[in-house]
Structure formats: structure tokens, C-alpha cells
Image 1: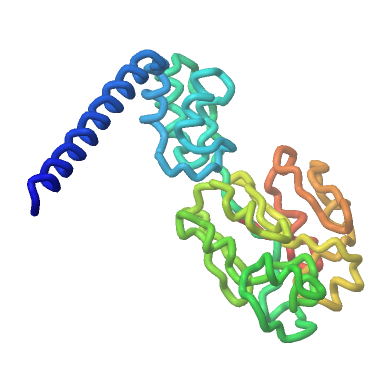
Image 2: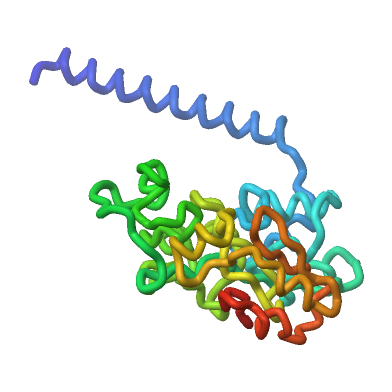
Length: 268
């Protein structure tokens, strides 16, 4: 190696080192000049949150939720994963009274397992619920509103609270943290977040009339209205040929489930 080459290498190294030093000093200076003070409460609230960053609260993640709570844009009980414990800790940080936390759980509004529903063809193709929903008839099952059974919800669940059993998604109530990811990926909008202590729920989402429902599935709501007529508190209404239970009015008497001829009103 010639003396010229050695000199060139040393010079280049020195220049790069100096550039790095100057850039580092400029970045450090910029950090001090443009520094935005962080509210200490945001950090405290953030430490009370579980850190799943699941988005179940409606915000981009735990950092965003913590900031929203401190700004008064969200309640201390907004995090569904942290539950009552996190809500109590955040309320203490914020100096607010502890609110009642309503625990929720995902509920699949379909009883159409493989042994109860009819199939109109053999589906062969991509195995995601969304892609199957684009197939003719919105899938191979005769009911165009039912669970597609490919488990996109189970794959999306960060808590392993869902599994597909006999062609239908089933939620483990104890493992579910109501983050809502399963709700967002179901192309048939079959999954709903309901109160954990809800007494009775309608496990069907078909919008078809009774005769067609019977032709498609042995476990579908036929919209007969018997549950509505017999409910002593007026908690049940019929809309689009399907029964709906207002959990605020339901007293858990079980009359609806007893009278339902299709047996799609089930106890949690």
C-alpha cells in the first residue's frame, strides 16, 4: 500500500468522524430546542395499562389511550383488557371516583354448526373467512349469515380465546378480554361484545323469514315472535326477522329460552 493511499484512507476516516460528530451535536441541540415536556400523569396512567396495544379501546395503543385519559377525552375504565383493576388504578392517579366497570365478552351469534346447517356446495379455495364470504352464496353453508368456520377470528384473537368447533367459532368466556379484534375481522358481523353477566342471548343472526331459515338450518331464529310476546319485561324486540334482547331490561327469568321453538335463545 502506498503512502498516498494510506493518507487518503486516514483523511476519509477523519472526515466521516467529524461529520458524525457534527450531526450528533446538531441532533442533541435540536432535541433540547424542540423538546416537548411530557405530562407526568400520562406516564403514570400508561403504567397502569396492560401494554397489549390491541386497539380494543378505540385508540391506536396504550400510549394514545393514556394521553386521551389525561386530556379527559376517555374514561379511566376505557381499557377492556385491563378491566376493573386498571380502571381503579387509573382513577386513583387521576383523582377521580372509581366507576363501575362493565366487563364484556365476545359472543358469536350463530348456532349453525356443521351438523345443523345445510351445505349448498363443496368450497375449494382460499381459507380465510373474508375470501370465502366473496364466494357465491357468501360461502358453502346454505345460510348466508352464518359462521364461515375458517377461524379468522381465532387467528386474530391475541388471547387464544376462540377456537372453531364443528364448523362454528366458540369463545372461551374466561379467556376473552373483549379487545374487539374478532369483531373487526368477521365478514358476516356475527361477533358482538356483550356484558359478561348477560343472562340470555340470541345465538342467530339470520335475516331470512322462518320457512327459509328452517330449510337452511336446524338451529336458526324463525322470527315467530313468541319470545317477544312472552317476555314479562318487554326486553325482546323483532327486527329483520331476528329477535333482539335488551340486556338493560332483561331480568333473566328465562321465559324466552323456554318458549323459543328453535332453541336459539341460550343462557350464558
